Image 1 (cartoon, rainbow, N blue to C red):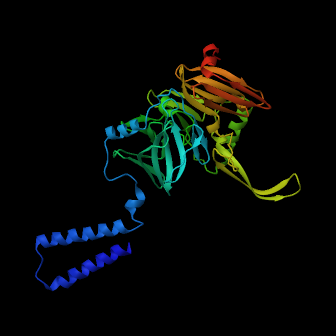
Image 2 (cartoon, helix red, strand yellow):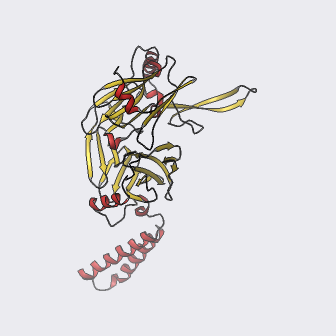
Image 3 (spheres, helix red, strand yellow):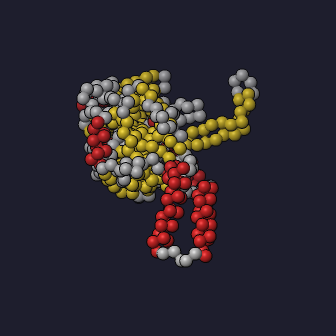
Length: 400
């Protein structure tokens, strides 16, 4: 920046020295302006903190959607017939058991399609900047750069390598590109194709976490808008009343919806916003060999606990949707105290009881092996139960 000011000062001094000369012609004035712009541009390019370098990684030479589609196809196809596996973690994710890392920065989130093997992920390259890439799970060494995300205050903007632009409050990756939402509108950039748009039902917004296959199912998770009650004690009592009512099975707290971005179909879920909170004790002093006294407690929203493990109370770990032989299905905990694991046929509105336990479900995990077989493993107290082949199980199950 100092270089720019110095150059401008020198130019104006030169102009001032020439003030006693005859007035310059129009052509000379144009040349002076062009010289000033050229010198300022060179100074900006040489400056390590220039805005243009910090804001966007999108190359000056844009490509067409057809060219981008060709790059994606060059990643290869799933010709082996195997299905990919994607496993989230605090520091990125694993694809087929191998950790995905990037020289550009930390991988923070992803979304993949196990059938095609394509996965899109965000890389934190600098403060308020994300790089968007795609890879093929069966040949993960090659990656395709899709574009950049830049945050300005509470707003995000995405610019693709093809020049497509979308902006909003919450960006999410999909196996096909980038999903962006703001207020009651959503936009889905499909790499190599273009932008689709959709409307969000009143009272809800796109959740910041999406534990399912958006690209292959067209379903995503919506979250109820906050009441913005702040420190209102009445609102706090209402929240407590909701929790107690749900505890005894009197009410259902439907703070989330499954939503189809193509058809607009919505299905409410018995999940609470309050379950997102995780607790960390502070100021702890050892009292004896068994007890610590702690002076404070921090509550924050996270899918991970303070030790890096899974915050099992968070809705992220309590539902999973994916493509099955009968179409999109949802596996979710349900009932008072989350006493059931239910499989939902999202297209036909049929519900199937997988497991139940009066004292509640501890945790469950959904996985898919290389043959495409979907497995559900659940921890019910001290016992462990599983469904080894969900498609076969559904073919013989009776709806609730």
